[in-house]
Image 1 (tube, rainbow, N blue to C red):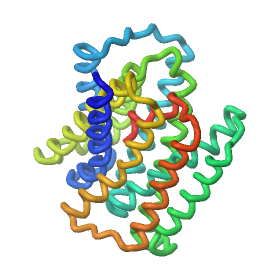
Image 2: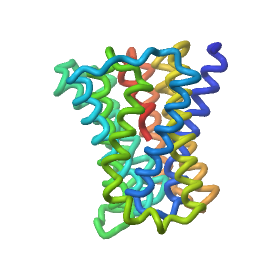
Image 3: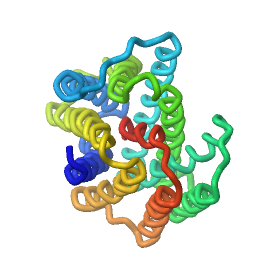
Length: 296
């Protein structure tokens, strides 16, 4: 893969991740069913990628690796469920922008967990993301679907930042594709008890949306991301993936007529600018970026 094709693969991956909320809204199923189906289809896609494309050798899991992957799977399940609740309650734009708060949580939690010094540009990241979230919120009424959806989306971002740090701790031993596959298996097993009673009521068209969500927005997007990191700097990847909310909001605007307000657009611009500036101002750490591939 050349740098040019890797950059194209990154943009395709960002577009696919941006479509996550769109497919979640198109599927008239509960978040539990959507997440279960997504995990199943993602496992199938990742198995194909690991078998025919990936050159990474799978590692024998140690006890601490198994515990870490189990925890990561639980965090991933919570992240996805809370994100799709946000989509159903607040809409695609609100859910996508609320989730985009995760870099700010990662900065704060890294400082607490890994005892790393927080740099000036990272402090500005936290401040700007906070300002952006305030602008995105139309009002602070908990009875409002937009406010409730944003809170669920921010919770999704918090869980994803915890997942990022969990994956970072084990990134040196477990290849990213192997970790993603194992974590998706955990997600499927966790959601099976809640999803099983509802599976017979899922329409065929909804299985199509869920299948696209699992294969393209999870398995294929993750595979493109991991493959491109072999020739693209992590800092560049972080900037490209800052476009994810833009793709998601644009598609929701086109398909569902979810017209964002001027205040929401301004808040989204502040959040995206904060992520881009932060990634350009300092050396991005590769483990932090790799974990985004299991996102959303």
